[in-house]
Length: 207
Length: 207
Image (cartoon, rainbow over the protein chains, first blue to last red):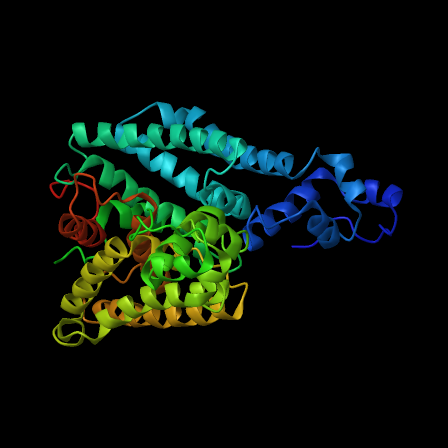
């Protein structure tokens, strides 16, 4: 992932200030946080990766924590938006659950590095803890759908509800670790496969 | 997780040297690597967490990388051992696959922090890359079982083989992120649930 607007010298602060927009700075920061870990990444390191100066970076953001906050907010807002859509609010629990899983897979794929960052959070700082709280709220909304689908008899209820939800999330969230957007499986196909495996399992139906 | 043999002053190097065995040092190191990230953890920090001195730590290991290598070797050896057992080598592909998944879940639970460390590796150092190569070999052995079970008609083959294996691993590996050994679900029950959800899915069979 390289800067999106290269071609201008960023050798001094002034030029650098305008050579990169916030979106590019965020992309680079998220890549570094994912590669090296947030704590091991410095503004100095980010400036080097962008080929600019630290002072140019501070034109965009107040510091490293600000970058983390903006990046996590992007991933969380996308996920939260899913829950506000009509199909997430109307229809059977199974319909709503399938819709939310489908959209979550699409968000994971579209904002892969951002969601990766979110899913790897350890909760060491206040910004991380706030993001984890928002992530928990999203997870709780999905867990509620699972509960409803168990209650109305669509989903099996012989397995602990929490385990069910966690295994479902485990499968969905693992996507950030292995999915390659340039590979043979399209995001739509991936969403179909995840939903199919989650609901019907991997055994051949005839068995 | 605290030191296993407290009660002796570790205020000076000599006393510290004998106050902690390697297993305790490893436990503390793995906890710190998982909490803070490997790169952000120093020998100084580990010594502080152990209530001992840096020089006492160097009695046990050559340095931080040595601790990482030993910790990853523990997780990998446990997983590799699974593949050498009779039930992993004899019987139908489905029997072997179910056995390997069951044992892998048990290893994950037994060595939770060690496997967590393994699963979060980014491959930034030679030690990490060697561990990732061993992990890939284990994964490939499981992927081969999935292939066999698809070929003999036990597992559905309408989903890309790689996607199938990755979703299976996603579910199994997620355990390190959420399973609480002191919670209501025993390791044996967890293994049953994982295998059941993976093969039969979350939809109620009647549907």
